[in-house]
Amino acid sequence: ETGVTQSPTHLIKTRGQQVTLRCSSQSGHNTVSWYQQALGQGPQFIFQYYREEENGRGNFPPRFSGLQFPNYSSELNVNALELDDSALYLCASSFPGTSNYGYTFGSGTRLTVV
Amino acid sequence: SQKIEQNSEALNIQEGKTATLTCNYTNYSPAYLQWYRQDPGRGPVFLLLIRENEKEKRKERLKVTFDTTLKQSLFHITASQPADSATYLCALDARRNTPLVFGKGTRLSVIA
Figure 1 (cartoon, each protein chain N blue to C red):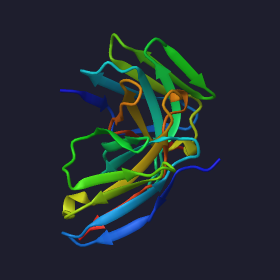
Figure 2: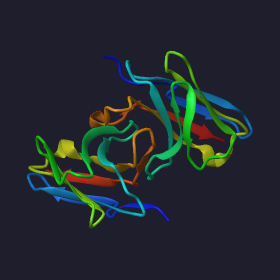
Figure 3: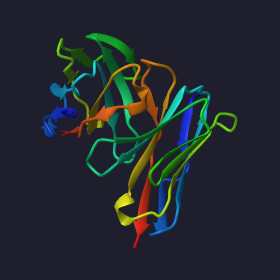
Figure 4: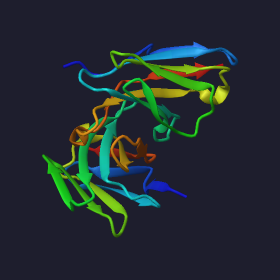
Protein backbone atom coordinates (compact mmCIF):
# COMPACT_ATOMS: atom_id res chain seq x y z
CA GLU A 1 0.00 0.00 0.00
CA THR A 2 1.26 3.49 -0.79
CA GLY A 3 1.70 6.17 1.85
CA VAL A 4 1.01 9.89 1.62
CA THR A 5 3.05 11.77 -0.97
CA GLN A 6 3.53 15.53 -0.93
CA SER A 7 5.04 17.76 -3.58
CA PRO A 8 7.18 19.71 -3.83
CA THR A 9 9.46 18.88 -0.90
CA HIS A 10 10.94 22.37 -0.73
CA LEU A 11 9.82 25.71 -2.12
CA ILE A 12 11.04 29.30 -1.93
CA LYS A 13 8.57 32.06 -2.74
CA THR A 14 8.56 35.84 -2.54
CA ARG A 15 6.18 37.75 -0.28
CA GLY A 16 2.91 38.49 -2.10
CA GLN A 17 3.14 35.48 -4.41
CA GLN A 18 0.78 32.52 -4.51
CA VAL A 19 1.65 28.87 -3.93
CA THR A 20 -0.03 25.50 -4.52
CA LEU A 21 1.01 22.43 -2.54
CA ARG A 22 -0.11 18.94 -3.50
CA CYS A 23 -0.89 15.76 -1.63
CA SER A 24 -1.73 12.22 -2.69
CA SER A 25 -3.52 10.39 0.08
CA GLN A 26 -2.97 6.81 1.16
CA SER A 27 -4.93 4.25 -0.80
CA GLY A 28 -8.38 3.74 0.73
CA HIS A 29 -8.36 6.98 2.75
CA ASN A 30 -11.10 9.50 1.89
CA THR A 31 -10.24 12.24 4.40
CA VAL A 32 -7.36 14.67 4.02
CA SER A 33 -6.21 17.17 6.63
CA TRP A 34 -3.65 19.95 6.19
CA TYR A 35 -1.44 21.25 8.98
CA GLN A 36 1.09 24.05 9.29
CA GLN A 37 4.09 23.42 11.53
CA ALA A 38 6.39 26.27 12.47
CA LEU A 39 9.85 25.47 13.79
CA GLY A 40 9.70 24.08 17.34
CA GLN A 41 5.89 24.00 17.39
CA GLY A 42 3.28 21.30 17.02
CA PRO A 43 1.24 21.00 13.83
CA GLN A 44 -1.58 23.57 13.61
CA PHE A 45 -4.79 22.48 11.89
CA ILE A 46 -5.62 24.40 8.69
CA PHE A 47 -8.58 22.47 7.26
CA GLN A 48 -9.90 19.03 6.50
CA TYR A 49 -11.64 17.58 3.44
CA TYR A 50 -13.97 14.61 3.43
CA ARG A 51 -15.28 13.30 0.12
CA GLU A 52 -14.39 16.58 -1.66
CA GLU A 53 -16.16 18.84 0.87
CA GLU A 54 -14.47 21.03 3.48
CA ASN A 55 -15.18 19.39 6.81
CA GLY A 56 -13.69 21.76 9.34
CA ARG A 57 -11.34 24.71 9.35
CA GLY A 58 -8.81 26.01 11.85
CA ASN A 59 -7.94 29.60 12.66
CA PHE A 60 -6.42 30.51 9.29
CA PRO A 61 -7.41 33.41 7.01
CA PRO A 62 -9.37 32.90 3.76
CA ARG A 63 -6.19 33.27 1.70
CA PHE A 64 -5.57 29.65 2.74
CA SER A 65 -7.85 27.53 0.58
CA GLY A 66 -8.00 23.95 -0.56
CA LEU A 67 -9.49 21.34 -2.80
CA GLN A 68 -10.01 17.61 -2.70
CA PHE A 69 -10.37 15.67 -5.93
CA PRO A 70 -12.48 12.57 -6.72
CA ASN A 71 -9.40 10.36 -6.24
CA TYR A 72 -9.05 11.95 -2.74
CA SER A 73 -5.83 13.76 -3.58
CA SER A 74 -5.74 17.35 -2.39
CA GLU A 75 -4.26 20.80 -2.91
CA LEU A 76 -3.50 23.61 -0.49
CA ASN A 77 -3.40 27.09 -2.00
CA VAL A 78 -2.02 30.12 -0.22
CA ASN A 79 -2.46 33.58 -1.75
CA ALA A 80 -0.64 36.81 -0.92
CA LEU A 81 2.17 35.01 0.90
CA GLU A 82 3.53 36.58 4.06
CA LEU A 83 6.87 35.98 5.76
CA ASP A 84 5.07 34.23 8.65
CA ASP A 85 3.74 31.62 6.23
CA SER A 86 7.23 30.08 6.20
CA ALA A 87 6.73 26.64 7.74
CA LEU A 88 6.50 22.91 7.11
CA TYR A 89 3.12 22.11 5.55
CA LEU A 90 1.89 18.62 6.36
CA CYS A 91 -0.84 16.63 4.69
CA ALA A 92 -2.43 13.69 6.51
CA SER A 93 -4.91 11.15 5.26
CA SER A 94 -7.27 9.01 7.27
CA PHE A 95 -10.41 6.94 6.99
CA PRO A 96 -13.28 7.69 9.41
CA GLY A 97 -14.10 4.80 11.65
CA THR A 98 -10.60 3.35 11.64
CA SER A 99 -9.19 5.57 14.35
CA ASN A 100 -7.14 2.63 15.59
CA TYR A 101 -4.60 3.58 12.96
CA GLY A 102 -4.37 7.31 13.45
CA TYR A 103 -3.45 9.66 10.65
CA THR A 104 -0.90 8.90 7.96
CA PHE A 105 1.26 11.94 7.32
CA GLY A 106 3.38 12.84 4.35
CA SER A 107 6.91 14.14 4.77
CA GLY A 108 5.73 17.68 4.23
CA THR A 109 6.57 20.66 2.04
CA ARG A 110 9.06 23.11 3.48
CA LEU A 111 7.91 26.58 2.35
CA THR A 112 10.21 29.56 2.75
CA VAL A 113 8.82 33.03 2.04
CA VAL A 114 11.44 35.72 1.47
CA SER B 1 -9.61 28.31 26.45
CA GLN B 2 -8.62 24.87 25.19
CA LYS B 3 -5.03 23.84 25.80
CA ILE B 4 -2.80 20.84 25.26
CA GLU B 5 0.46 20.97 27.17
CA GLN B 6 3.41 18.67 26.89
CA ASN B 7 5.22 19.81 29.94
CA SER B 8 8.80 19.25 28.81
CA GLU B 9 10.22 20.84 25.71
CA ALA B 10 13.21 18.52 25.96
CA LEU B 11 14.05 15.41 27.93
CA ASN B 12 17.47 13.76 28.16
CA ILE B 13 17.70 10.19 29.37
CA GLN B 14 20.35 7.50 29.69
CA GLU B 15 20.16 4.50 27.39
CA GLY B 16 18.34 1.59 29.02
CA LYS B 17 16.21 3.76 31.30
CA THR B 18 12.47 4.37 30.99
CA ALA B 19 11.47 7.67 29.40
CA THR B 20 8.18 9.16 30.61
CA LEU B 21 6.52 11.98 28.67
CA THR B 22 3.45 13.88 29.88
CA CYS B 23 0.49 15.35 28.04
CA ASN B 24 -2.06 17.47 29.91
CA TYR B 25 -5.17 19.06 28.46
CA THR B 26 -7.83 21.52 29.58
CA ASN B 27 -11.30 22.28 28.26
CA TYR B 28 -11.38 19.23 26.03
CA SER B 29 -13.39 16.04 26.23
CA PRO B 30 -11.39 13.83 23.90
CA ALA B 31 -12.79 10.58 22.62
CA TYR B 32 -9.27 9.46 21.71
CA LEU B 33 -5.74 10.48 22.52
CA GLN B 34 -2.95 9.65 20.12
CA TRP B 35 0.83 9.71 20.27
CA TYR B 36 3.09 10.36 17.30
CA ARG B 37 6.83 10.34 16.72
CA GLN B 38 8.42 13.01 14.51
CA ASP B 39 11.98 13.00 13.23
CA PRO B 40 13.60 16.27 12.02
CA GLY B 41 12.25 17.38 8.65
CA ARG B 42 9.75 14.51 8.46
CA GLY B 43 6.04 14.12 9.06
CA PRO B 44 4.71 12.64 12.30
CA VAL B 45 4.36 8.86 12.47
CA PHE B 46 1.45 7.32 14.37
CA LEU B 47 2.45 5.21 17.38
CA LEU B 48 -0.51 4.50 19.65
CA LEU B 49 -4.12 5.45 20.22
CA ILE B 50 -6.01 5.16 23.50
CA ARG B 51 -9.76 5.63 23.94
CA GLU B 52 -11.47 7.59 26.71
CA ASN B 53 -12.73 4.37 28.32
CA GLU B 54 -9.27 2.73 28.32
CA LYS B 55 -6.75 3.17 31.11
CA GLU B 56 -3.67 1.73 29.47
CA LYS B 57 -2.37 0.54 26.08
CA ARG B 58 0.88 -1.23 25.25
CA LYS B 59 2.83 -1.87 22.08
CA GLU B 60 6.23 -3.52 22.36
CA ARG B 61 8.36 -1.13 24.51
CA LEU B 62 5.71 1.59 24.48
CA LYS B 63 3.00 2.14 27.07
CA VAL B 64 0.36 4.86 27.18
CA THR B 65 -1.97 5.68 30.07
CA PHE B 66 -5.02 7.93 29.94
CA ASP B 67 -6.63 9.49 33.01
CA THR B 68 -9.72 11.50 32.03
CA THR B 69 -10.18 12.67 35.64
CA LEU B 70 -6.69 14.18 35.79
CA LYS B 71 -6.94 15.12 32.08
CA GLN B 72 -3.55 13.59 31.51
CA SER B 73 -1.80 10.98 29.41
CA LEU B 74 1.60 9.48 30.15
CA PHE B 75 3.75 7.96 27.42
CA HIS B 76 6.48 5.54 28.49
CA ILE B 77 9.36 4.06 26.49
CA THR B 78 11.05 1.26 28.40
CA ALA B 79 14.65 0.15 27.79
CA SER B 80 15.20 3.33 25.77
CA GLN B 81 17.71 3.32 22.91
CA PRO B 82 19.50 6.14 21.06
CA ALA B 83 17.26 5.32 18.06
CA ASP B 84 14.27 6.44 20.17
CA SER B 85 15.62 10.02 20.05
CA ALA B 86 12.93 12.12 18.35
CA THR B 87 10.12 14.57 19.10
CA TYR B 88 6.99 12.95 20.50
CA LEU B 89 3.64 14.62 19.94
CA CYS B 90 0.36 13.98 21.69
CA ALA B 91 -2.87 14.71 19.86
CA LEU B 92 -6.51 14.82 20.89
CA ASP B 93 -9.39 13.60 18.79
CA ALA B 94 -12.73 14.86 20.05
CA ARG B 95 -15.06 12.91 17.82
CA ARG B 96 -15.04 11.15 14.48
CA ASN B 97 -14.41 13.52 11.59
CA THR B 98 -13.17 16.30 13.84
CA PRO B 99 -9.56 17.32 13.41
CA LEU B 100 -6.69 16.09 15.50
CA VAL B 101 -5.33 18.84 17.76
CA PHE B 102 -1.62 18.55 18.60
CA GLY B 103 0.56 19.58 21.48
CA LYS B 104 3.94 21.24 20.88
CA GLY B 105 5.85 18.04 21.43
CA THR B 106 8.66 16.86 23.66
CA ARG B 107 12.12 16.37 22.18
CA LEU B 108 13.61 13.18 23.64
CA SER B 109 17.34 12.52 23.54
CA VAL B 110 18.56 9.08 24.59
CA ILE B 111 22.23 9.20 25.47
CA ALA B 112 24.41 6.12 25.03
